[in-house]
Image (cartoon, rainbow over all chains, first blue to last red):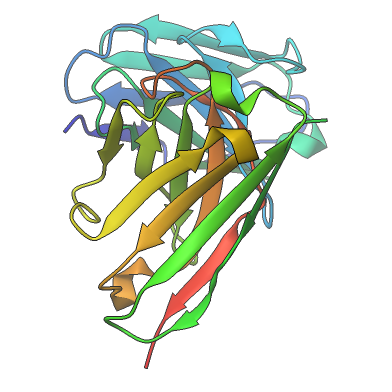
Length: 107
Length: 121
C-alpha cells in the first residue's frame, strides 16, 4: 500500500497570502495524484487531478505540480473561502486508493 | 446538477449488518466507476471500496475486506454497500463518490453528502 504524508499538518496564513501544501508518496505514483478540499460539514471537492489538471469550476489560483513521489498544491492568493482541510490522494496503485492525512489551512 | 444521495445509515449493534445505498441522477451512471469513502468523526478520509462501470472489477480496503461488498445496478442508477460483522471502528460518515472514468483507478469528481453509520451496543 502506498502511504501519503502531507506537510505541514496545519498552515496558518492570512487572506491574500500564498499557501504551499506538500504531499509525499512512499513510492512513485507517476502523476496519478489528486487534491481535494473539504470544508466543515461538507463533502470533499475535487480540485486537481493528474497532479496538475484543475477540475471543472476550480479557480485558477489553485495549481498543482509534481510527479513521482513529491507533489505540491499552491493557492496563489488565499481567499476567505479557501480556509479548509486539503487532502491528497493517489490512484496509481489500486486497490487501494489512499489519502493523505490532510493539511488544515487556517488563519 | 449531478446528484448523489446516500441512504441506509443508522445505529447498529456490533456484529450486525447494514446496507447502504446511493442513488444518482443527472449523469450516465453506467459509464463511470463508483466508490465508497468513509470519514470517522474528526478524522480524515478513508477509501472503503470501488467498482468499475460494468461491475467487472472491484476492490476493498484491507480494513473491510471479507466483511463489506460493493455492488451496483446500472439500470436503476444505484450503488450499494453491504456491510456485515460491523465493528465499532466502522463508525463513520459514508460517502458515495463518482469516479472520473470507467475504471476505479482514478480521482473522484463528485461526492454525495454522506450517510452516518454508528456501530454501538
